[in-house]
Amino acid sequence: MPFEATPLVASPLQLLPLKPFMIEFKNIKKSFDDKVVLDDVSHVMETGKANLIIGQSGSGKTVLQKCLVGLFEPDEGEIIYDGVSFTEMNVEERKLLRQQIGMLFQGSALFDSMTVEQNIMFPLDMFTTKSFSEKLKRVNEVLNRVNLEGVNKKYPAELSGGMKKRVGIARAIVLNPKFLFCDEPNSGLDPQTSMVIDKLILDITREFNMTTVINTHDMNSVMEMGENILYMYEGKTEWTGNKKDIIFSKNERLNNFIFASEFLQDAKDMRMLEAKGKISDDRDMEKMLKGDKLD
Image (cartoon, rainbow, N blue to C red):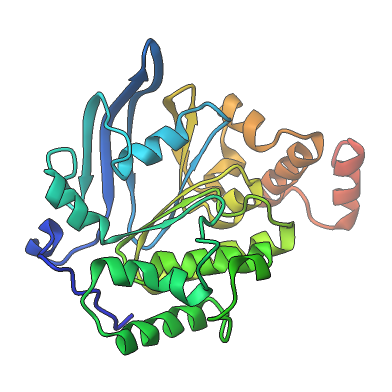
């Protein structure tokens, strides 16, 4: 992406040699009053991949994401952006780093009183000294990238749920960020639209080599996008791996979470047998579905 946001002051990350912009967090702990929400969580979010944080409601994934972007301060542990300690940055340094972070919020969080064009231009107005024509050119570039040409003057109320998500993505990437955070990007969308949003996020992540961190409950997203997955249980790291590892995982809590229904459990069993070469044709598949033994 040829656009440069031109921050007003150099960021701490700009002073480092060029290398992958990964995020690492070590031994993160966070409590609210007497309730422990995060308990010694560590992981590495990799560049150019969809990094998923999954888990049941109350598992701590939302609190973890808020710690990563500085909305919450961890009680213990360290957060590192590309070798630079976010934990030790001062207020001004964090502000500069946030110019390199894009956010896609659960409800898209568009300003109802602003047009699509104004919504997307908002970060450019806040963080750059570009001329209006340069900013408008950039707005049109990102609208084109999310397949929403010509909607500049529409208001959020005139858009479908999927279109709002795509506007949210356009705004999140308008500053050409190195890091992209997505909170439940498929919330409220039908399955087909969810797949479109998933593919768009994954394509943008790879195309621009961003470090994308996604909180999700959507199991379709996990199995389609899960290149680097952190599964949390009661505030702890329960399992890490990718979508292929899930099929063969023997972690009971993970299996109960991902394959909650009998249908999904059968699907997992069939995938495992296929991988082992034990299902050879449609008759074997039919026997499997009926619960019969294979020859």
